[in-house]
Length: 228
Image (cartoon, rainbow, N blue to C red; front, top):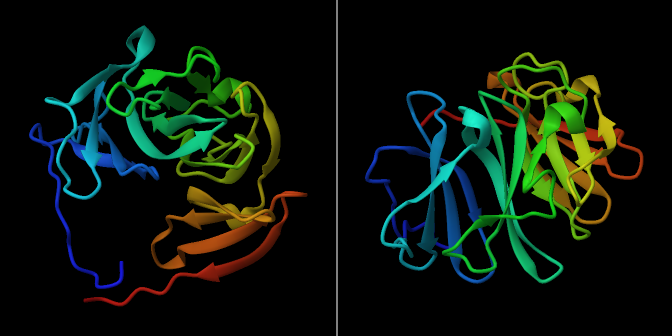
């Protein structure tokens, strides 16, 4: 970060795309790999050494979505929650899900049974969203284990709101559906007061700060891009 020097580059040998990228404080980088040609029932996880970029398992780890669902890993994060390291990822295209893996043993990820239903929260049910191809985008975890998610409540296009979800993944505690959150694509907890939500909206892309306490918008700022 100090020099901008590239330390390593990872490219999956099956040609799949890393859409989930999350790092913990133990030196592990978790990648959720998505089929570039569209959703499939099987996705892959890669666990890398943060210093070298080398895979820490002999092969990619296969994950099969239940009930024949064709989904894809999306945005996520890893957090230490009550002494367990939990890897969260949204999944969409074929459904609207948040998955939670126990990665306390980093090379042996397993669905965390105490989140959602067997490690998977169905956002259509939890947040009452309309079914559609994009139901939930990026997720972030708070210090109390509750989950924040950029959610598409209307079931059409990118996210249009922010949801605060209980630590057990079973209910929505609050939501922000302010018009300023159009095209909400990812979110990040910012201290005790705010959640930052980024939009994915071409030249109108922006970052919006949402107050945790009452789920109102505090401020919105455009992101400025310069062509190389």
